[in-house]
Amino acid sequence: MKKVIFDCDNTMGIDNRDIDDGLALLYLINNPDVELLGVTCTYGNEKLDYVYNQTLDLVKEIGADINVYKGRGGYTMHDYYASKYENNTNMEKEEVKKNDAANFIVSMVNKYPGEVDILATGSMQNLLDAGIIDTSVIAHTRQVVLMGGITEALKFGDKTMKELNFSVCPEGAFEVLTQYSNVSVLTGNNCMDVEFSFDELNDLKNKFAVKNHNLKNEFLIKKIEKWMNEFKNEYNQDSIVLWDVIAAIYLTNPELFDEQFVGIKSKLSDFNNGFINIAERRIENKRITSEDIFKMIETQENSFEELRSNVINIPTAIDSAIINKKMIEVVHG
Image (tube, rainbow, N blue to C red):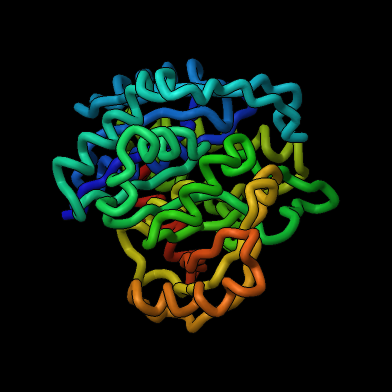
């Protein structure tokens, strides 16, 4: 059984905000192979207070016995869809130490060294703070699975969607992607291969009508349908991308994905737009050792001394239908 901390920016229930964090949380709670140690809240889709309160409400609504921890920091959002904001997080050490979410991460990793997986789907603020509070967290975390970042522009028709995970806390993204040795990133671009359409929603609704499922499941369908209509109004699309759910499914079932290990060379400013700068592509579906990583990095040092280098995994779903089926299993029961 995987020991998992879910670090998220859940906004399920807020108008014109994504529902994928909430669905990912439900997926983890209902997965028998996951021991969910706790949920840590960060900013991203919305301000931290909204995220924290919505997550508490969701946990209460589904009757889950899960501890929820509030992070810190945030930004002033001027335009959600255009990703116009100002980050106003205080990085003084004494303020960092007050981060309840980061302290929880530190305590769990120290309690279970080498056993904890972190799924992070919002800003990287809590992971950044955890590494400042206790640098050993970086070495003692078993793996980090992230949803965020782009390798090229995210296009929905004639509109470009801005990145809102790595870019809202570029310092955190920079540290996590270049300091951890076992990082998998479900990028925005790769997640777009997995779409959930109105046809699939209608099939799901019909199954509920036939089987007369309970109100809890109806509540989820209503949330999905509401967001799909909001997304269609903004982007004129007949499907949504279940970003964070895809990352959660990768965490539990990596065999459903093609894994591609790439060398990255990054500077802090790259992450102002959430951009992952790929320097070198490696063999797909090949687990590599720490020794392999250092060899790759050494080949880049002379050319890119001013940059940080690392090797990360950028998985891609093998079959969109299978990923959606696993998500539907959570909703449909």
